[in-house]
Image (cartoon, rainbow, N blue to C red; front, side):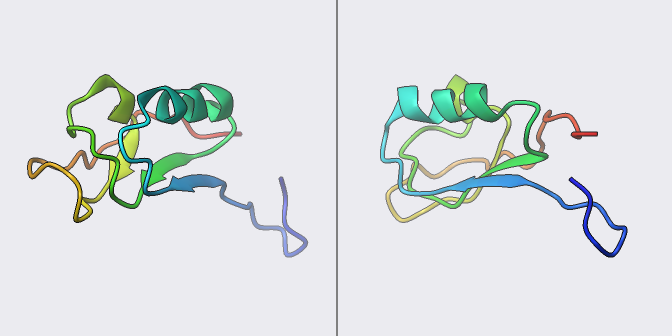
Length: 80
């Protein structure tokens, strides 16, 4: 999508407070893969940072999350 000023818009998928909903977190990735530049989770996923569902999400820990390493890399491809 091009902006009127000639720049390019960025699309991010931002979620929070999914509280252990593994299927829904995975479905969001499947639905928006290739359509957004980043998946961001703003906390309270209640999933471990290394869980398969959290792969590709940039995430921060919420007050309900398990302490541990925060995944800081995403393998989401840029949308052209």
